[in-house]
Image (cartoon, rainbow, N blue to C red; front, side, top):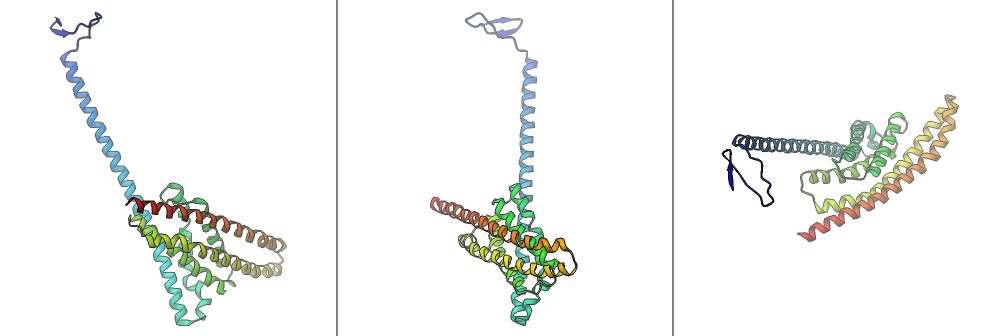
Amino acid sequence: MKRQAGVRVRVEEDGCTEPPTAPGNMILHQLTGGTLKRFSSVEQKGQQKKGRRMLSFRLAYIFSYNLFQFCGHTWILSNTIARFLTFGQDAVADTFYSVGFVMSLCQLFSILELFHIADGIEKAKLLPRFIQVLEKNVLLIMVIILEEIRSNPAVCVQFFLWNILDLLRYPHELLCVLDRPSTAMLWTRYTLRIPLYILSVASEGATIYQALMYVQPTASLNSTTSLHLHLPFVRVLYLPVLALGGGITVWQLLKERQQHLERWSKKMKKK
């Protein structure tokens, strides 16, 4: 080692020397490095807080949505059963007039579930959920438009099946959001909903068939030839499409059931 201009310089074996470093530059480098480290740590903490805030907002939103649907369908089912026990068969004809508004509200908000799945808030298959939402809303719009079909017993049966299906799903979703899933509710949701969904699709087909029978004479009396001609085609096309969509949904539900039960069994084995 040798000194040059008051600064120590190391001579390497190959004759090359390191450039001298001034004390001021070293202090500046240390200050800059410390500032950058503090800035990066503050930035990371800010990003973590933002991520936790966004996560908490999503959890609060999906919990509120599932709670709203659960309360709405619980009220519809309890109101329907109470009216039937009180008034007997006369309550069947008034089912839509007593619970139709709440049912329409719940089904309207169910469209948001498609955005939940697309955004990743809810982990589910998009295609079967889209078919279910479309089926329910098309039938509900038809019942709202046609006054003759509102007092049909098929509407009461349809509302009852919809409520049972949704009450199998939303309590389990609430427990999953709270990170307290139940084995019994998991099995009940993914097992019982398959036969109930098949019954629901059959009831939807019968209700739509009866609704189109009410529409056709009205169209012919009003001399709307185009609608009169299109109604048989609607009946011929929509019912097979409904059956096809129901078959695809049942196939997806069976796959989803197998995946969830296998995943749960693996978790239980690890414990």
